Length: 307
Ligand code: G3P
Ligand code: CA
Image (cartoon, rainbow, N blue to C red):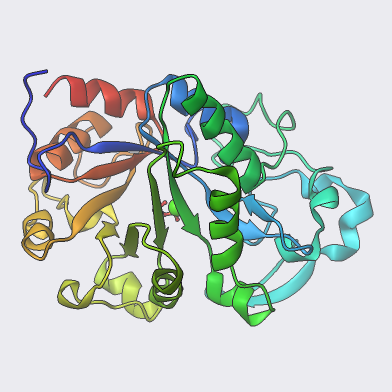
């Protein structure tokens, strides 16, 4: 391997399978994670929400209709209710209104219309424990794949009596994840959750970031200078400008000692001003990102190998 890297450590940037190989299979299913591992992802990314009985399951949203067939289950018709979310009031089915046993009667579906639909209804909702079991099994076979874990809306779950810190930590401890040599990052948009986590654990933390216009709306407008975590997870547009140039974000973050993991590269949806995900990946790698989230890990591996 001849490549030199502009990452903070000089090591190769990590490839994080965003919600698994979610460009190909319904996101957050064991199948999507398994395919990501086969394709050479260094990390898989579970986004976590909680069930009514306090079990961590892997879903991007507390609401269920975008990525499951819950709407096809007449027995749950009366569970569709209004809730106030950070995006405003929404009527939907909510993870914390379902026990794990009930969630197990649902199947995952593809969120994006233009992606393969033929797997809809084939795969279960995965628990965090099952995902940990998957990487533990791989590690026992000599294939070390990391966990890049995002707690979704921890403030919302906190407000209804479910703190997410201990359930995540307890699962990692009970399963012996760190002892097995499996690298783990904990990521979140909510700085309060990361601060809670830091009080109980030394795991490396990543503060996710949005471009200023969105960050302001959500009250998450942060200056890089004041971020206490190991690294940051910027939306890729904070690095890749729409005129095809690259910002100084990675340099500034590295000067402050912050790792940079950028989200999200998608073969079927390159960012504005970028012809392809390969161009984006090359630019991100050259800019020195320490990691990249992608829906298509195979492409990210290929482009990294071509450096
Ligand atoms: O967690 C990094 C990235 O995944 C954030 O975006 O909305 O896909 O979870 P989201
Ligand atoms: Ca995520």
